[in-house]
Image (tube, helix red, strand yellow):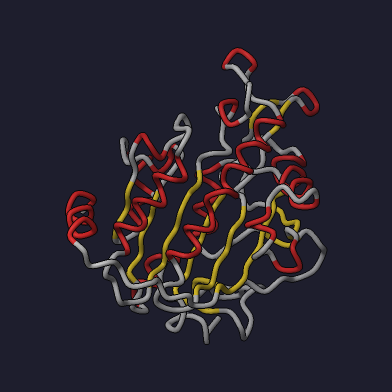
Length: 284
């Protein structure tokens, strides 16, 4: 990571509430073609979350404690705050002298951007402002939230505006809300009274797959992009009588994870005719 930081843009995407079993099943069935195309060996890595709900998991991840490989052993971390006695800080770990990763990367010359999704990023309360407050620039709107049928599309729209005309390295964090309940509306033919199910959870992930490529393209316009995409925790749909998360259950602790480098793919030059310039003025 010491050769990556400074030479690559960095993208962290948390697919909030995504279960490992659902993610693995869909990629094996060929239902996630865009994600399968970038996942190492075309599959998710099975990991354990550092927290059982959004705030706890993200507070840990922003301190450098990403989901831990499920296999026994001491696993080196890509990022770590300087901390005496850390057994998971190795030669390849990028060590930062700050309490959190966004601040550490900002000190290294990165512009840090948060595009929130679930309520812990909505900036409507002191608690909802704590995690976004770690970033130089943060954004949230109801169209990014859990009740929006087009949340990821609107989040990517906002990220595009935030990163337009920026030349310095960028750390972009996107908290994808689409998997979080309610997600019934992503399943064709479902009605609100049907409630959320594993099938609608899966349909929400397919929705994410249809649009995630645009985010990857955005982040590779200027330089290669080191990418981490994972879940912060899973959620229960009746297992052992449980519904939801913030509980110590296997389906909550076990999450999908992937890290990889997206190579630079410069954007095509924009058309210069009048309609394009007018549209840019409207959008901007």
